[in-house]
Length: 176
Image (cartoon, rainbow, N blue to C red; front, side, top):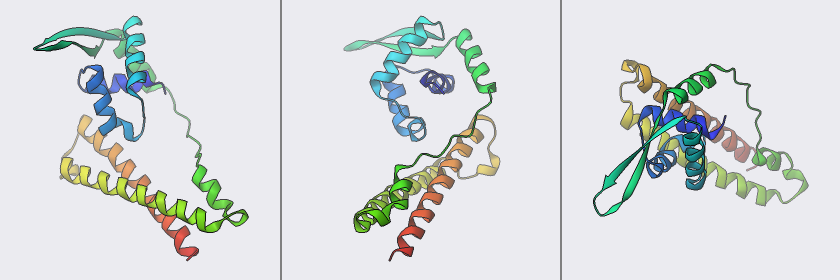
């Protein structure tokens, strides 16, 4: 996947300025596809040159004019084509898993500290995702369309974090 596709999904949900997109990435899309502000602005410029977005300049009181991006018909087709392409299962790459496997060859106590720190990070993320689910989707059985899609992606994040928490907990308990 290219950043262009993640940006077009975000812009199909709601047109936005580059800064607004960067903030949305930090709050939602960034949980599974990260991008810096610089990357976002660079790709938006390329998407504009390629005709995938339409840019509207919006005057602001006492502030510079901002550019608001929306997906063009050409961009809509490019996104639809990409959405229909098959996706291969992504192989797991985990530096942490390699450290856990190799702990017998080094300082196990240091590896256990690394595992504890990762467990804390995953537990924090899991708690955050559960709070988002409780706040934003109190009745998931009533969802449809884009709201259902958003909830199901969040559920995927919850399930992944639950797996990490369980696995790292098992590892630590086995070595206690």
